[in-house]
Amino acid sequence: MTDSPHIHLGSLLRTSADAHAEGELDHLSYEQGGQQQTLRFAEPAPYEVDVNALGGQEMYLQGHFEPTLVMDCARCLRDVEVPLELKLGTLLRYDPAVDAPYLEEADTGEEVLVFGDPDLDLSAYLAETTLLAAPLSVLHAPDCKGLCQVCGHDLNEGQCEHMAQVPVEEIDDELGTPEGSAHARQTPFAALRDLQLPED
Image 1: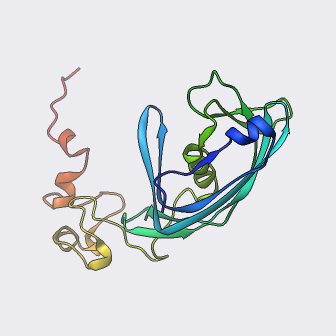
Image 2: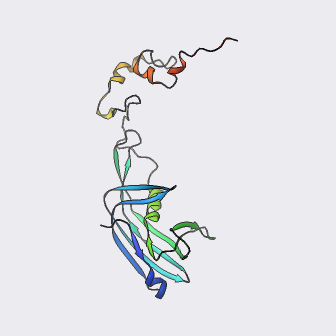
Image 3: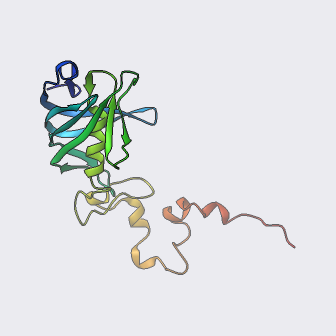
């Protein structure tokens, strides 16, 4: 198990020899917007990459990554396991003036991973590839009932006291929730009920 995925490209830069790396990750840490982010995996995620010289300071990375990403259910926030099989492939460009690896778009429209340290950390690249392949949202079950908007109770485990105070048949679509109920007190418009407006 490795803390972060690295591939050593010193020999490739000196002699054009191919480079190879493989391992397993139980998470991925990367920086986004100046803040540290983490992708969680349900089980060790195997990766394998090969880098071949193309000439000059350019090379090509290819391989595969198979994480089982842990995401939050969009309704109740339970953990949901999302298995992914990712095929890796990107151009690399060595620039010793670069502090941290970053992706840029080449003239051909293809993305290029630019790096300055021959000991290349692939964390940000694998994280971006994973996020692009992952669904925008997931449900732990198709009939997930979500959370009570008042107290946060998981409604998949049964109704909470707030649901009991406002039976569905008492809610009028035109009039809204009955006054005096917990739901009525918690609505963002409840504070406007007693608002005194100046008369014209």
